[in-house]
Length: 142
Image (cartoon, rainbow, N blue to C red; front, top):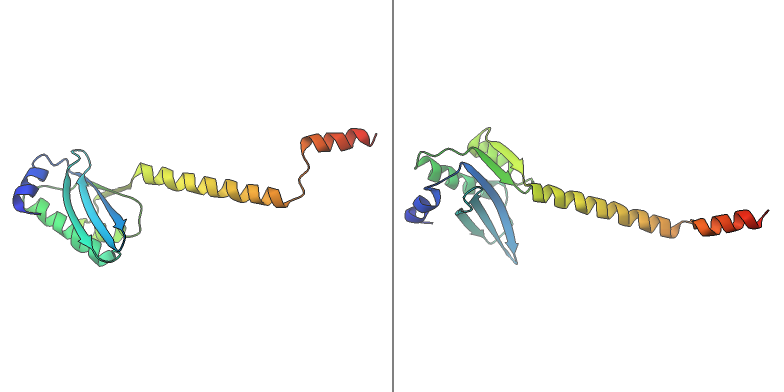
């Protein structure tokens, strides 16, 4: 992205960004967006799955763009992927890092649904007697 675009994108920089990756077929798009201004700051298209080196270089581009404009990163939000913590510390030191609430809730929901499905399968395979059948047998035996 050229300097004119970055000047525009960072003119009202909030100090907070969201970093994410989007997989599209054989490609991966790394992206950084101003979390409060909703402006895309940087992106990079990769022809492979990203690794720590890719993320470190990408975040280094962000740091360079911010430093050139005397701006400071206050915090970064990610999706909780293991790709981010080490490169964030390498490039930005102890900057605040949080996981996106949406992604946390998504993981919790998936875990709960998985547990419910496993319990339903367990119950379906067990010899569970319905309440009706239980009371019917109880009163019939008397």
